[in-house]
Length: 456
Image (cartoon, rainbow, N blue to C red; front, top):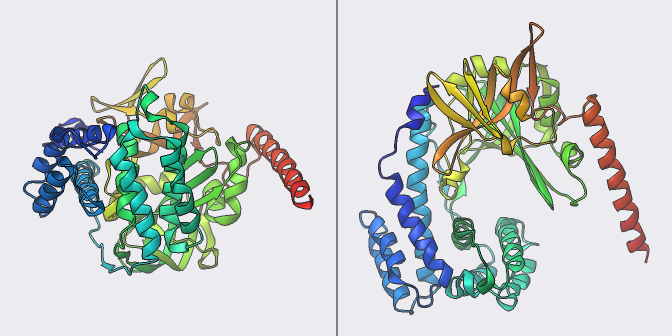
């Protein structure tokens, strides 16, 4: 990988982010009577785009305090489009640095409105939120989302929006009253607001085909939240016909906040047999597995079976360099969603207190050690002594960083590999066994308490 290309400035990037920051600043006091400067910067940034006229109108109406929900939708779309351009510029740089091709197949079909009254109710609450601004939130305003979320959750096609609103409302409720906040997470809340606004529209349905061939896992990215967990397996898929491509398979599960660390695998393991293949170092043979144009496998165990042994580092060295990078869905075109598998070796390592940096051909690449999960044997210390690394290339706070998924090290003249997802399918490792036992005991206590409540 050409690390030097990742350090070069991207034309127009700072200007686009400045326009986004200006709009996000306008959301602090609210859009009922905002300062026009932040809105004007957004309109200027979109002046040469197909959205120019509609954005200019929305900005004018909003600055005059006469904006309706349709105008807020346009502003959310404008912000999302601007972030999309940032995403595309950064992904183009990553594609150039890795030398891999980009799969441009993004065919989709028009979506049909689903429960339009519920979507309108969600949009109305989001509009009220934008008018009040983050400094204007209070418990009465935030609690208005509760009946909307309750109505959305039973609808399978609306659960994505329901889950987003549920988490967003919980964050806002924990921050009330807004007028007393010392620090406001401007970009995060604006991201959640704009994405939720666009999810209240009926968008195109993603194209879904089927995949038949061999799946070669690279590693697992584990996300943990107090009430939920998700594992995302990154892999190279070699179809029966056609070029190899990068794919993902994800599984999510709700969890109590007492189950942490390695115990999380117990919640996820029953829903994704692929986790066993990762921990055992095996390929999987897929037959007609549903696959979206964006490279997401809609996992169904009946379409998969365990294959022969497949070392992740052999896959990274041989198959990864020629695998196509999948296209990105329109709503996912955000720099925070960039997570491109890369293979690195021949680097030098610098360690400064809690900071790790890889130097490749004289160019530095920071290690995102905070993303290494505790639910596996991979540690920052192992990364610091490694000789090769499989990771996800991300962009954060203005710089590219690598999140390690697996590393190779030389121990007593032998090559040893450690994976973040090594305990995903079960383990005999002492630390892993101890953590799983603690999680099993915690789950048993919770089940017993739940049984008491039900009996009462």
